[in-house]
Length: 264
View 1 (cartoon, rainbow, N blue to C red):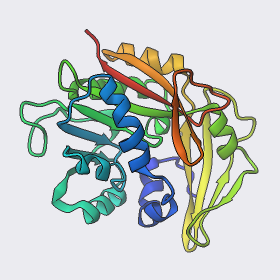
View 2: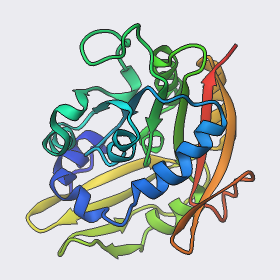
View 3: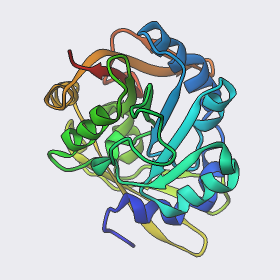
View 4: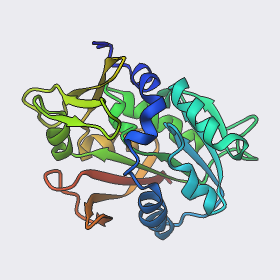
């Protein structure tokens, strides 16, 4: 089993089947119908969006359908190749690690620099596993937001989700035949690094390493990076719909959704 814990290596192996394995994740419902209206309530104006950790571009369609200019980056060449195949010239794509984002200049970036919206969706923050990673990510986000009204939205998995999906003994068949998710973590607890493996026919199992970040850690890292947290919302699914609440529950919600803006 490949155990280097590299998200890049894990997703390069996973890229060709990623969309099929995650077909039930409805980004129009999540981003288009739940998150964008919430962002608009916090002053979001349509313009340029930067999808950090864009993967195969699952978030692109809701944005493009609403008239956004879209730029995406990912650390995995395999995932970027899938995004390029699907969207071609509709978006600008480049390779980058979320912990070392470039300045908003050059081809493909918005005129004058700075994005109106930056997204880090579907576990990007949880793949940051080392002390200081959040501060590095958020510093790059801060430098890429258009002042003074740019917004960033990201999700962080709750302890409940980690316990349900990463605990040792958890085994789940994936929608693609012969692919399997297997939890590897013993005694899961708040703030720790969790591990699970994904394996498929003819593919060496790859370990996915994620870290549970507490609300205090997230808010402290935002503040240290020149960002202010506007809200933290609990997210769960009920009746096939995404439900957001003003009181996140680590024991009952699947994710916490954070919206932040430049301080001052």
